[in-house]
Length: 167
Length: 223
Image (tube, rainbow over all chains, first blue to last red; front, side, top):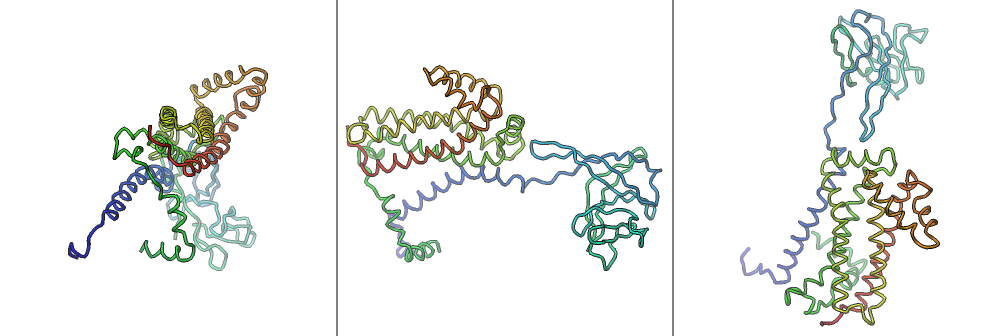
């Protein structure tokens, strides 16, 4: 494009420069505000702390045991205690801590409450079933295994961290 | 691209006359700083409006984090100031802008006064301007309480005692503003409502009238 057929008129020049300067000013004003509004979505999720559940390593058996414990929940300017539960068991010489939240629609599962399948987790809402290691039984509503807590053993005591999805 | 979108809309809705009517107006030589630099004093009205726009925008974003409750107000302000990215900047804009509005408005008032622009036929616009002055002061007064810290609380104690000093209606005015006998939960909720709904509504209405009149009557002549 030569200079000749692309002359910038005085009006055009003023339009461009004024729009440019105005745009910079508007952007300078709005950028911090928009960043502030987006903050919750952009903030990296913090790893939750490990919490003792009051159960020693020796007490964990192959039979799932239900433990109830509290975690501290940070919610903006609130901090609150949230109660959590886990089914803790030994499986293949590893300690598993299963979340009791059914992976179908979020009801709470229990161990061995279904008379026909005493060695399984059972969800009363839609009869979802899970094996002892949390694997969902095919043909029942849940589509993936029960979630697991991060497990740590410190001084022989069980500590549970955040909940992770499997499969 | 942008031109095509504009043309498409304009062809259907004929929007050009709408913004032409707003944007195209005569700026006399005596108010144009390009001709006489001293004419910058005529900018103060526009600058007041500019800062008001910043106040409205930053205020809107602040309410995303603020809660008007005596237990949590201070905590939420602390959180948005110290934990939220750029929260300090946005609150800073609102905090300093609040003072700047008053300064700009004062300079604008001085300019109008010393150029005699309030004289006939512009008396009504002066009256609206004075109402705007009170609305802005009200916004400053109600906004000052919202962080719910010591300064906020005791400034409001003093402010309400000034209101109470008014003859005959003083006691009534104080209880009405405080929403009760003490400065507490109801005062904070009330000041919040006044600060973000009632006064901004009044402000926008009055600004509309202010701008309508200046366009209708034009800028006052040179000294």
